Image (cartoon, rainbow, N blue to C red; front, side, top):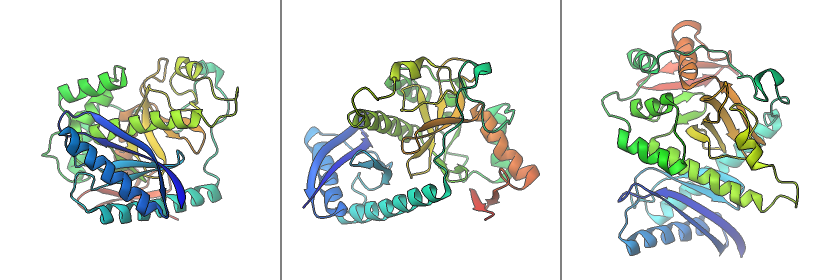
Length: 319
């Protein structure tokens, strides 16, 4: 028997709130452990009269492997199908981690930039603009699969803000109001719905709790100092001020950094396995402007990817 520590994160359909299921499991395989965890989640929902939303749940294994998407928690898939998809996703996650290690992409940014008061310069220097206009530009290009479905409502956004405890930048609220599908907004990163974003935020907060117990005594990062640092500063651990907006399903999220400072609202890449965060764009609109420019003008994204439009936006590596 193998001891598994599984955490399943999912969204409730009755109240819209989240629910995390955390527990130890002794099974011979990941599939068997996942099957037991999903059964427990569904039994909890039935016992409490709750429902589970159709969005994929997120699975974290032993506090370190994952997160991976876990579809079918709402009963649309059988327990065996959920377990099999989890095994496949975990193999893919492991392969991506190995590939990243071989490429050396886990390197973090250089030390603090004193000119910005301790924050890092964004990797890309796109200027941004009006997010709604940029989104309409994506629609006119044919990069959005369905422009008729509305995004999050104002009340949904208020509830999500209250859940995280922070006022979000206007562009973040606008992004969730605008988006109607899960496009691959930049290579390898799929935009999250509002429910998925909050589930991912809950997941990263739980991962922090798990990792905190694993740090040798006296060596854990100073979370209060990280939270007090200006936006764009390296975050060695996930802090509540980071709001996930996209995910690569392999352990890395694109988050909007709502800490104060000149880079308030910047888009940062966060990965616990890679050691923290680094800023990529100065704003959400700067990221989208980079995408629009890659499609309309340059034909490539950061010189490494070619955009393809066939009902929705996708990316093809030039390698």
